[in-house]
Image (cartoon, rainbow, N blue to C red):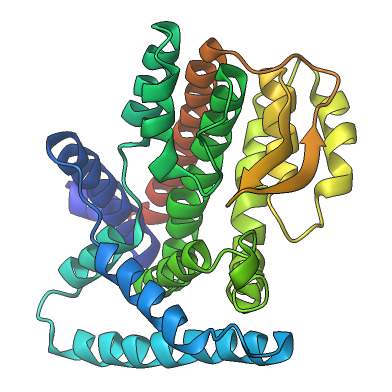
Length: 323
């Protein structure tokens, strides 16, 4: 009896295999050189908003302009990429390329580790400089506690948005959907409603991103909750349940704060404007430098568990009973 008679790679198994290979490849490339393939798209979004997001327009006009900007950008790109697939000889390589572009950088761990090292060495200014490109908030007046909190939130949200959600969309709907979501996410980053000038213009991008992220974020959060079995599982679920059906990442942030036993959220400054956000696990201690490393370990545990489950499902679905 040969391997071919025992296993047969179906569509799901192929998708999981491509995902694993691309993740390993991107992790390896990221260690060699820091790069962001969608940097030029980010620049395009900035220029587009400068042209169509006119300050003199009404709020309603800005909302409509934001929606139209998404449509005129994504629809042509989607159609071109979809049609181009017919000319590709090896479909798997094309899918792998689209997935590679859709996934975010895997250098987040090393960046947050550098932030922790700078804080330990009392180099707060250097830590702020490293943190600043990762977050929209103003970092120049952050205390070491604020830097630690921001670094922890960035780890979680960027891992979810640029990695976990992308992988879920790829497995469910294919690489083109995953890439279109990532482009939409870049629009959301550029036109973030936390900045006053994008409050109306970026509303459509924000709403679409939150709808798309809802299910993958819940899957990640429930796996994070599963890791607390035997500890405070029921307590964590009871405290987080009110956020479950909200169209945002509050459910994940609340659970993460509970698991790490720290405060997250709260007041933050965006372009010199104070924004009062929800405070999560408000009775816990403020985050410390060590919690940055602890946060990374918790995120990796969920990712490893997800891959183990995926690979197991791929193997089970690929088993062919011999006749």
